[in-house]
Image (cartoon, rainbow, N blue to C red; front, side, top):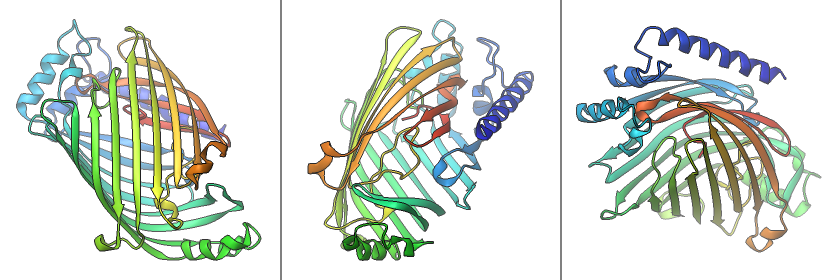
Length: 399
């Protein structure tokens, strides 16, 4: 209830501030007279949008942060967006335009003493034929470790991970199709140290004690390179309502490229968006991740169930799959309500996947179209998982 009260106050303050800014004209959309940041982003020399970050994940006991988004556009691109936004006969005209390149800087501090800082860039070059996404950062993160797959701890361990991470992907469009192909790279240098490693004794089967002790008390580097193949027919990069996105990532982690552990990581994601009419739309997501390794991987490198309502890294395993469905109702141009449900499984042995327990989530939320020219919305989701109810501040689509 305390979290709900704080969140409600934050939302009310944000709406009040939005109304005050809208009165200035710079944050008012001439189409409907409502609060909109499009004009500010296009007329600001740096296209800068400050976004307060409210972290509600129970895994880190909540927290606060700040993110700065920098929208990069040429004068030609800005003119095209302005013409699309002023087309009152088509309030979704921006869907057909190439999304702007965005740079981001962020920092946050959480309730359990974790913090992280970093930055990234999403770029579209050569009229969208080249897409780049990259980022780097440093984190000092405290998080509870519950085990891997069917290796369950009776009492979680408090794990501290201090890590530097670099991740980047470049995708090149194949001919005039919706397919993209390119290289991907991930690097993490981490120092792992549990606060209560002694609790392993009697907490898990004795034959796993030495293996987990060695795994959770070491400095380790994982470095991988690979390929990504993507099919993307979505009508919007930030807030899609129609189209498909399929993505396959395959990475090799090997000693020859600086990794302390050798393994292969396969990630498959399928996103479907379908609009029934002007009011109703649906979407569903299917995702499967598999780490092919002869030994256990460090917690940060092990796939985990990622669903709204489940704390970060709560359920991990070398073989993970999840699906989620969402139904949304558009009240008007600005406001939209949504409801969703998901299910996920995590296990260490692919052959035992069907016998592993299912983790079910459900929830609801809303979105507000905060920048119509860029087809960018923000909102809140409230999700209930197996153990907790979690609030999320969403920027754009949840996936």
